[in-house]
Image 1 (tube, one colour):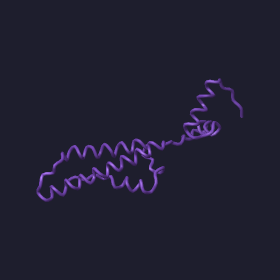
Image 2: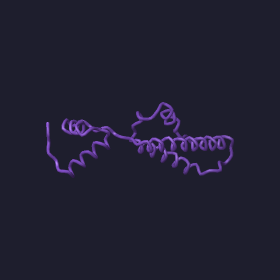
Image 3: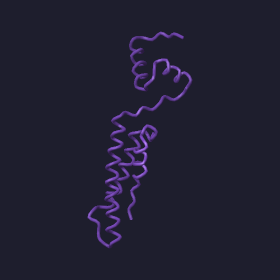
Image 4: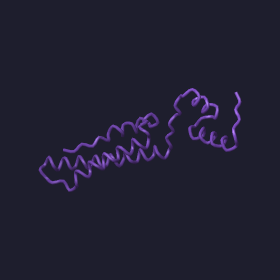
Length: 121
């Protein structure tokens, strides 16, 4: 099958195929057959996801310290509401960065994702 496109159209098609990690032929097949294009997650997005996970784990440790202080009848030295909000925001950002597609992450990173649950008394 052959098609004719202008130089500008060719560049646009080639660029879109490259961004999707596909050949131009595969891009046309997927579009013609209405199959979804694969989601691409950049290495920097994955690295950012991992770093935010580490920050989230630190927040979780602060939450546990605050819960321990509360359990001992002491006033925690942090604003618990702000800590909870920050934890939820980090969790949301991590998911948005990767498009909620955890299949591109390693087993270790998936475990980090499960450890992100922030609990406050």
